[in-house]
Image 1 (tube, protein in one colour):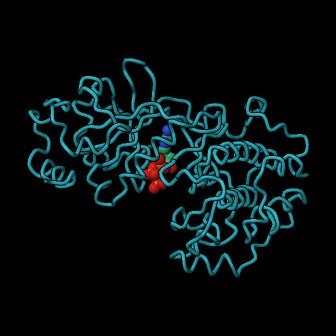
Image 2: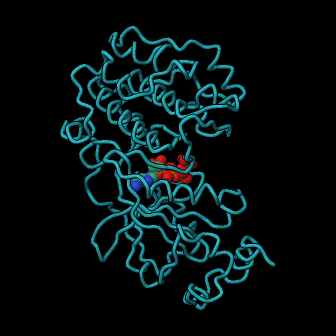
Length: 358
Ligand SMILES: Nc1ncnc2c1ncn2[C@@H]1O[C@H](COP(=O)(O)OP(=O)(O)OP(=O)(O)O)[C@@H](O)[C@H]1O
């Protein structure tokens, strides 16, 4: 019997953009392997349903796929759609991870987590659609450098709530970083990209070396065992960078070199930082080599001097203005000409040679 990957490669080779192929219904019986493999997380959808989407531009190319800004003509609303090649998923052996990403995101409902809208599959691609956010924390940080302390505090409190929520659901994120934190129209954060997340019950351990080098905890870099405390290290790196304008440890070429740097280099906290914030970051708090000594429960943060006066309540936090974020937000619709989709499942590369959105 042919594998789903063989079926897909054949489809790619012979039937590229033939109209006939595109219009053939996907719901034929028996369902081909290259479709069945991705069910039920990625249901099949009539082509007509996809035609109401128009591409407004390319947002980013990540390691797993291409993120597009699209206009849903029926809803008259703008969304982001992540388009992932099925061949790449099977070649990289990430099918389980890909399905887990969707099932985890479906389980989550939190004001500071980017919620999943719709998912579906075409013959060659998987599609993950969600609301569009015009900026992310990394772009903002690159533009402004250090953040004001009040903003670091607010973002920290929002992220503490998100991580406690995820860990209570036995989910470890494993890729907390600025690029994966989108900002909504009012400047509050939305954690996204659950591509490396997994269910990890309390007390269980993980061993896979994954994440983004500069944010990876020493126990992750060394191949485990590690647990949810690894996410708190990543938060420490993120807050350090927001507050000081630089990473605590410079990036290295691979995880072995990164581990050596993280273990031997004491990241100096600039004296310009207020004492309470230094206390939160330094050795015995978030950026602490021993995961057992890291802050990791909500009550640890509630009583920490840096958070004095902060209500750890999503609704109250959302009411706080984040004016400096608002000033940099792109509120205007993209001036790029939209590209109407005859078929959303085609090869997207040629459309986007020069069109990454600013
Ligand atoms: N809903 C959205 N609105 C706007 N931008 C988004 C949205 N979702 C993702 N992006 C942008 O696209 C980038 C890549 O998305 P995502 O992280 O989901 O893909 P990935 O392939 O897993 O990427 P990576 O390899 O960087 O982890 C994000 O860093 C973010 O800048």
